Image (cartoon, rainbow, N blue to C red):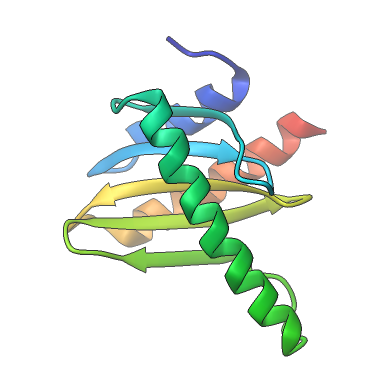
Length: 122
């Protein structure tokens, strides 16, 4: 069930990415706005919030050195890669893909989703 236009955007990104297992759109505080994943919604929301914490640490580190804000973050783990894309106003989009998966495709799909999410927020 698609709960909102935000979930529909994430669904399009996930379904268009080979190996993708889910995606989410979240606020700066880690609160999930909406998501699309086969996994339990609560577990996916916790997963999303944890990567939001990592993104905030990266943002803070970049600000210390005056490098600007983080736009994109990729964390590679055994079995899964997690992509996080800044959307604007502290919001971010996240997608997880099984390894190996075509990361270029995943990055492009998440970037497109971020643009659509910004438009939907406006």
